[in-house]
Length: 113
Image (cartoon, rainbow, N blue to C red):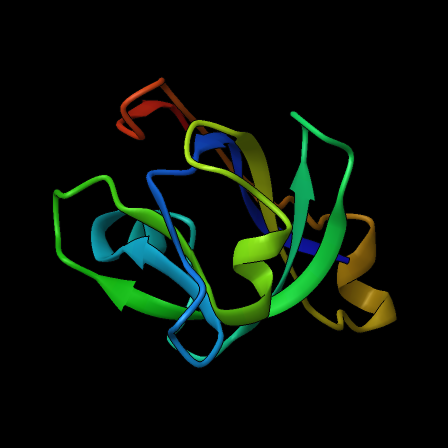
């Protein structure tokens, strides 16, 4: 099941020389209930790319969304992306399950929860 997503985040940087992952402002990670090193799927609204990587924490309040390593080839600075995390949910919880969906503005500030 979808656990959480950061919807319409803007890529602030892409660092090909880093060893992989996506750096996300720690405030955004907390709000979306994402953990460091958690696997996430990235959906690039700007170019249609879809791929998986893992999260690392960026500076709180910075608005950073930086693709690192090979993922840096899948998006460019300014691209709009969706960052989604998933979780297994037992059958008793499925009907009541609600993911955390966080919409951000063009500066990656929380617009709506």
